[in-house]
Length: 309
Image 1 (cartoon, rainbow, N blue to C red):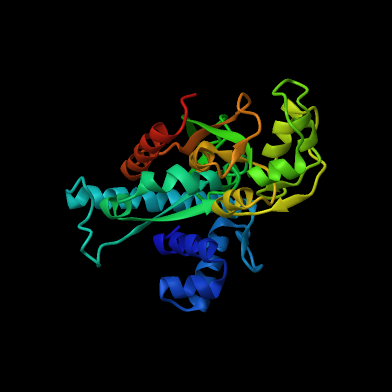
Image 2: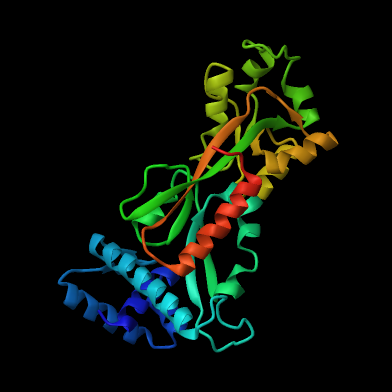
């Protein structure tokens, strides 16, 4: 496959439509279509389903992974030929910039992950393309070739990837003082704490339909999942704010709840029963100085913010 064809496939998947990919590549939509057709003829099978946004066939997924790997190796070669281990001069606007697609869960993105990457884009000459998804589902983005690496709760590596432990994110069950007074009777702190049993029917805040953290906590501490009203707040910062405002109770990372707890804006429902979610870094098993640098930065950030596994 020609380099421009691989670049076109990556742009088409990133942008979602032929017109958007054409704008990014500074060509016509017809040129994008012709390149994709040429790839399909060379491969002998359909690679792209012409939906909106476009979707890849199984063969297209294989080609996308190949395209991402070629782009990464090309970027590594450019840096070596430049003879500058620190990366291209950040002030040089003409330098090529490598897109670095990564997947990360919402709570990590809202707390420790972004500081880990701060300044790295200019240093390495990369533009980060972050995909937010639940930590249990980020591996699907690795399998599809959409991202080069991912923060995930899955220890078993995806085919073609390697895994390293990042640490555990500790969650605590919290609510506002007014919410506790309204919905929960006085607790005893024991295994049959009536406050925790009552929590099952109290309003709860969930990230989305796939968020099982609140129900898992109730199953472990109160004998069953929740049956009360559920508020769905699909951003990490607004999720925490909704709990502080009394929409319902919820499981918050320590990074988001320790200060409100100290200030009296939140109260903890089960101080002796935190929930630790292990996080891992899965990346393609590809020798790449760029990917190695990103991996090292993420590992340092995790070590400073997460609990050791």
